Amino acid sequence: MSFRDKLRGRMPIPSWLHSVQHDMPFLFCTVCDGRLATRGLFTIMKSYRGEECVFEMAICARCSGAEMEKWSTASRKAARAFRETRIQFEGCDGCQTCGADLEAVRGMAVHAHCRSDQMLAVSHMCTSCEEALHQCLSPKTREENDRFMKTHFPQPPWMYESPCPEPVQVAGPPLS
Ligand SMILES: [Zn+2]
Ligand SMILES: [Zn+2]
Image (cartoon, rainbow, N blue to C red; front, side, top):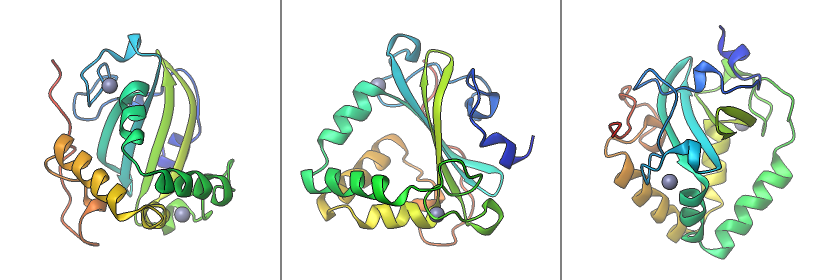
């Protein structure tokens, strides 16, 4: 399956949204280790460089809500405004924010909103637009994001590092 095909949302949760590290569907929240099947909504996040998945995690709604509460009000507002005003290519195969074609971008972040074994919605944003979103956040919120990444992913994915680092392994906690 091409990467372009992968980005077309379909249900149930497609195999490309399974954990690459564990070669099976995500079963547990990366943050709290809670069983996703019992946690209602959850989000699978993956980042690609070309067709290679370089980062993956699954986070339950409770944990993502708790993390969002650590953001400043200004950052939450800025992130919402960014999504509401700049995401304008809903149906497109490439970046939903700038419309760039997949082949033309450095990388792509995919967020899939799921419940149980069903994928409800999927969105994708190129690395440049992710960086633009990051720039909208307050320094305190950016620090909080860095702390979150360092806590859960001691080896950070490439897009959080310098522009052209070596590839890193997919990070994630061991299944318990
Ligand atoms: Zn959780
Ligand atoms: Zn973009």
